[in-house]
Length: 117
Image (cartoon, rainbow, N blue to C red; front, side, top):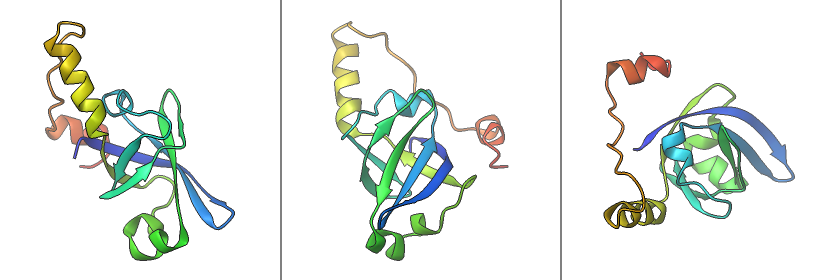
């Protein structure tokens, strides 16, 4: 898990359910339209990326057989950003084209700021 997101919008979109999920900059820097993100263990395609989050859609079968179908506005979700984005970032850091960044520390303060404690 790379971080925690918060469901900000949940709306019906035809037979699919659209979710807008707020995420930390550490997650969003690896997000691109049509890229992948894992939300509560489900690998999904990103539809849109904004300054504060991203949107994904799930089909009825996914809603029925996963916990994501039960999520409502305000609920928290576990996020894992795209592995390819992480590889590209690491490659650029090793070549000196990006400054090295330490990974985020998930400690008590981190969890409290996100309303998880």
